[in-house]
Image (cartoon, rainbow, N blue to C red; front, top):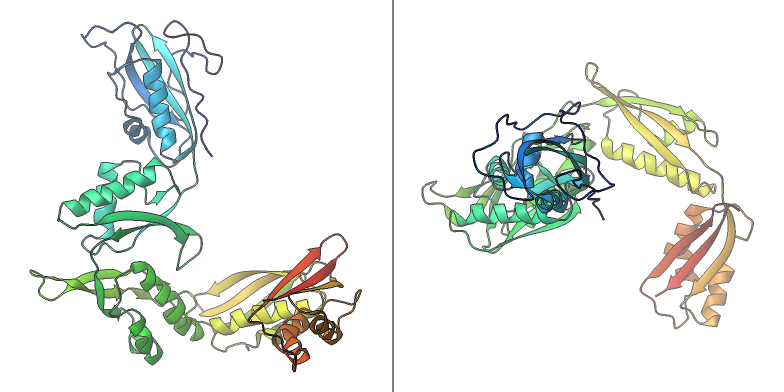
Length: 451
């Protein structure tokens, strides 16, 4: 995918190269030297080698020159040749932490100064799923000591990801926990984006109980009843986070706690701390509810099909009411559906929240991009007999050239098609559906597959 390794040496040390040219010995701007040496060591320099007098790195915003030098495997005082520098660059590139790895050098006498020129690659957060024997901070420290260049994130693949797994396994070995460490890239259960999740495949630890640090979650009957989804099941922070996102967060949103935050689930062993029951863990979910907001309204822009008052009615909240986050989300969806009923299939709502902590009000600035309305194109039906297809086509009321109505399309799928096929020996379990848009002609073909 990934890396360009352009570094090479030239001049009197090695064979000439047109990719990187030697430069006079100097410290480039914005470069921090790891180490320098003013006197050559007493050991005789081998033929074809030079003493490494300094290592610097530029371009990385995440890691220092010292950290990069350590990860390269080189150190000041080494005797290096062309192959050594290329191997060091390859080693950095193989981590996946850099989208490009180049190097250049400046020579003086028997020594050479090396500069790595790097571009940071995109990385994503690291998550530890089921390692209750250690805190996140302990695992972070172990990885940093073993791997280096660790800032809590990782590339999606590459040798660096494998090295993190090996560092965790080494930490487990110190306390005699068997099993293997696996990793996978998944959607974050809370928040947005991806994460690299590391998990232990081996000993089965079950959840003995789940506690929340905020009383709203602790005392809510709906949450209490659903805790059976976790209790008695294998311990997994991922599934605890999914539970918090799907079962607990809506409770807070509905009561106006729009900035509720859930911390990483903590686990401790049940029973005597000196003789823990390794089969069960107590899970503690940190909850920070934040302020409780009332509704502050919406400032609309870009709307033409519906006016601001009509859009406000679709939201359904009045000034001063509890800012019900579930109602707000439902309001955005109702607005999209209303536009879809008029053929505006490309409508988008850019909703920027406007929280006033002093007044405890929550409002939004919403930019509406309506796009152009679509007209009905063709109706494509598959999976039915000719007789059944004729019935479905007869029941379909949108004709070619008419404004496409997305709400009618959904109603047809759930009700009308079923009624049209009543009395026929037709058996289907699912209707596959797809809308094929022609963005130039602004027509849409409706495709139905009876499976």
